[in-house]
Image (cartoon, rainbow, N blue to C red; front, top):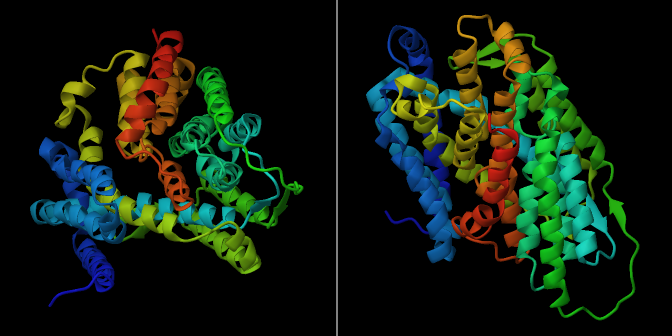
Length: 487
């Protein structure tokens, strides 16, 4: 029976839900077996061959090339592509490794993907109810001010929160300009990534470090590194934007409308989101067993608070405000669907990395010696893999390297006092390098999607790093290495 374009997404969704239910029942049956297998035999990462990352490469190439060569087809069929690559990995993995594979998959979705999407949805929903109304000129000075504000607040409300609040005002301010892609690119560099380097609220890997025992304000030690990158980027942006601004045909002078914020009560809900995230890192009541996966009760409470904040925003914000914001659900839908596939396909890569010297990437893990090595390996992997597990992998690698056999809290204390340069290296690398690709950090892809909805022709998946990331960011990252991580 043939399925039309409208029926296929529903069919794919039904298949996905069916697969999730089947996985759940299998998870119940095999969870204990998997848990025992982990201790009695090698870990999954030590067993997986290097070619098991092919589906991950496949989904990345699909995201890169389909929008470029078949944009209309991709717009309607990207859910099926994401489901294809996820299924291509999941089925053989489950057949071969049974309970251990199911446990890893459930762990990825329960511990990482679901909280990830809930947080993005809450921030996207709340920020979509805040509308900056009035005349915004789109001048180099105004754009610079917006980028500075975004860079400063990113560490305190998260790179995603700052990005979702400011991207629409930036787009409206520059709507009349022909040359504006560079504005969004530097926005991703600074607001969606580098600005989040100073507190655990800024970026997921730093929050993970906070959960592992790194003091909340310790990451302020990365301030010199962050300024070393952010200040040159802001200066370069102002020069580039001034150049293009002089070439623009200025719009006819119209009556200026005073700038004001509508839906400002959503800032309360935004504070609730940030508070819930911070609260989940400070309150540790114990774990709950979900299909064999141990999830902290505090994380479940956090996610429930985030959902409440999102629905409270929807219930209390006038529809006209969201209409004025040109708010639609497509950007969060696109991110949720594509990252559902990415999180599935990323399982082998992360598992192999976490196997360390026992995995197929042992030849890399055994060569890591200096802070510069850790800075570049953590950063490079964070450009394409989830930066939180990348940070976790090398955090644990440092504990094993310098403080083998010590209790966790003593090892972390030693890392903070005796090997702080190494910890700074993986912290800066995991945050800074997220700006290198659209999938390096969650808000990157959302900013891209929102910008494209507003009519901005953003660079392709590979066009972004090759045209902007490599020529602009890599020289700065190299200078960071020479100045801060030479020892």
